[in-house]
Amino acid sequence: MNDQGGVILDGLLRTVGGLLVAALIIFELSAVAINHVRLDATAQEAARIAAQSVNAGHSEAAITTAVQEHIATLDGTLLRDVSVDDDTVAVALSRPAPVLLVDNLDFLAAHLVADRTAEAPTSR
Image (tube, rainbow, N blue to C red; front, side, top):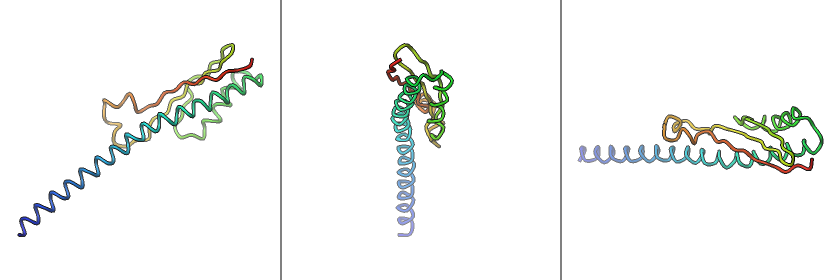
């Protein structure tokens, strides 16, 4: 009976350990997906702020500064580019996903950093 109890306990511990690892991986993969969705919203907001600066007649340096000030409070968000055309402004942002385990998986490497470009109309 003692050997049987050890086998059952060993099997139970392996099952619980496997479920915990699976749950952690699912949690991290959801963090990657949420990072992409949140960056999309952040890019839209940054483009709106840039358009307001363009409409106010600010220089491109001031427009870039306004966007940088907005994203400065957001963990890890990087401003890649701000471009102003005749009737639109485009803002390109990137942000790495906050993960611990899945960053070592090569097949996910392309998805761990979210890149988004958003545009907003101007009334220039």
